[in-house]
Length: 356
Image 1: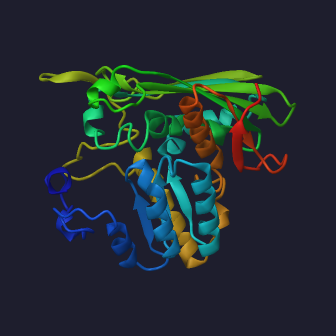
Image 2: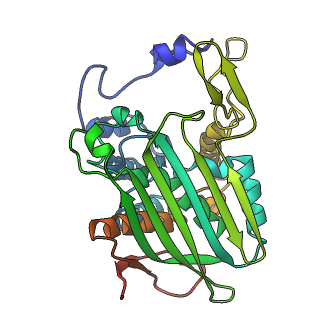
């Protein structure tokens, strides 16, 4: 903390941060002590490996705390629905940290997509360089995969674009292998995962399909993460290259880079942190503001459904990711998502192998 915060930004003192457990101590249940140290109405922000989100989030919710969870919030539809019910029971705000919703280009594209008629086709690609597998070595391929880690971004974005207009009904997944297993000392995991989803439009009953690909075996490039997508509606199309904003840096001794300070600005301005208007920061800020509104009584938790990525409005993304994982584990078998009714705002409640 001192190296990355205190030594970089004026006025930031990491010594005031209290940790559970203490530095140098490993205690996997320390989140229980941390939650007990806070009061109902306080907030928790959870950025831990994917398979630990559920138990930490549930402990905080049951404490009466408002919760933000990094994507994916959980790995199974069942756990997701349990968090939805727990948040309702304790009347707390529970959201996922999905910062692409606050990217001004993504936001504008979403508003335009809503006017392009029924959905027809979408594809997305997002990557991490293969050297990142060394950083992820403790969990990569063991407790989660690259689809949960990266596809969650654009599946959520696409679901948000189609909210109330179309819903996912069928999921199939495909993969590539060969690099990650070698780098992770024999851990069985995929290099690249593609999830294909059929979506049914409510307006005319037509079907569109989305193709979401993520990889963690990309080479080093001018960006840390390649991120791009294409959307086609029946009345128009949109193309976005999130990674390249027309801003490049060439400097002696460092690789050529395309940078995006719209997402995050680590470079100090006159010695001070100046990333407050980046969408990576705003994603957290709006959650904190929403918690203040709820705690003051000015707004209700339900007022933020459709405004923020609340746990009850992003169920479809978790269902797609789990169905994709099941499909991979069963040799590419397609899965269909199940709903209680035909209301456009119904969320998936189950899944089963699709009839061939």
